[in-house]
Image 1: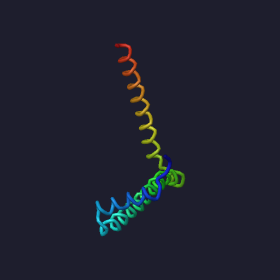
Image 2 (image 1 turned 60 degrees about the horizontal axis):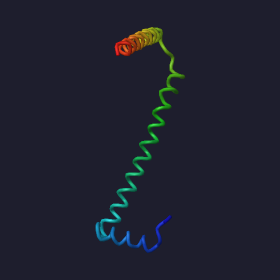
Image 3 (image 1 turned 90 degrees about the horizontal axis):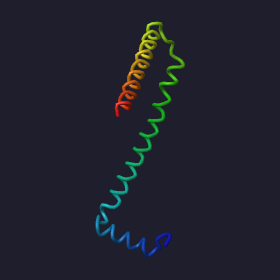
Length: 95
């Protein structure tokens, strides 16, 4: 019960030809191939985009104003997380 025998593959091929027609099968195969190439290209770009900000951050100088804004945002983030933790704890205790 492992793989399909050559007779099974012939039956599958005949059914595909009957369903889609001999003209549409090459067009369908071409479209599937193009879709796979596009998918590979786009997923490759995702990895490149993830690496790019880290590389820019290492090379770009940061101004004092940007450092101050970053520090303020980090403090605000810490306050928000503390507030969310407190709210979760209060909600849990209320149950």
